[in-house]
Image (cartoon, rainbow, N blue to C red; front, side):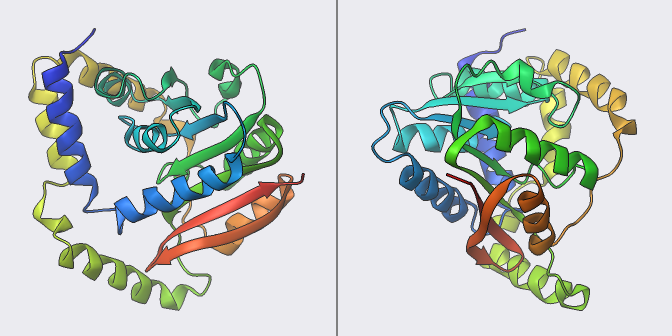
Length: 256
């Protein structure tokens, strides 16, 4: 079910543009996450990194460029996005097909040694709170002492009445930087499904999403609630290192 390099490049480039509509200062957020990983892995000869919900390898590729000696495992359940990553960013990571939060999902990773860092961007918010807590616990068990989980996402404020303010600030930022000039999520997926090289992958994706539709809806949890869950999961410190509007990067450190 392989696809050509030209097709992969086209759709990954369109994905990058499309995502600018949704992730406030997306490139800066990627850079901040990579800064944290660089700091935590300094002096380690071959750090082991896990990219959760990797999509087509956007973050993995940026990590690999900055940290060329790192071993990166990139995990996702979407067959189409994984194939785009395997083709376009083939040298960035080892791509793993697994459903984050499902029973035994970490077994598929084939890590073999403790992680130095786990990273994620806009991929964990769909997990129901009990599944999110279990996922955090499993990640804490996979990390070495002093290792980190770095999560970049949209976190509503703890005070619900302020949610409109933070969302508006982020939306206006996206408008100023031209993010809303690009196709949106639905348009991208509709167009991708019409590409003959992606049709089988798109059909498989639809089947998988139907199969997992009963898994429960995620919750828009505030950053402080994530911090509480992370501490319960075994992380000793949780600190925000960057924020713009409701977009933020949280760093959770395993006790070292």
